[in-house]
Image (spheres, rainbow, N blue to C red):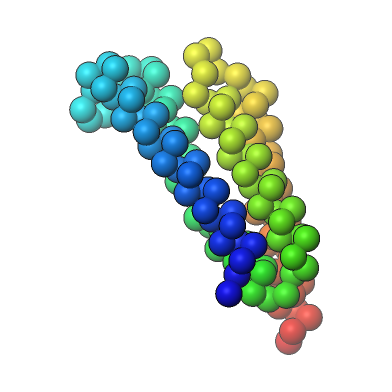
Length: 129
């Protein structure tokens, strides 16, 4: 069982649903069934899409870290950084005009989480060989 990763996966799921509903709301408001011809629809779609592109890999890395013995506190740190990164990125990209500092900070936190988790996995794997 992976309780720490499961906790953050649940929170990530709520974020995914929230961003999905924002896309539906924007599509309805601007009467866009397919595609992204309106800039606010495009922003909602990209916030959701970017979340969907990064969150699954991050959760897999967290689960592998937890399963391979990374201390619980460290897995929590990875989860908090992931949540913060995804939330800040979504906030920044969703605004019109875009708030680039939040979008950039969000991507930086997400990349940091992925890099640290990847390095931790390499270290855990090397220690177990």
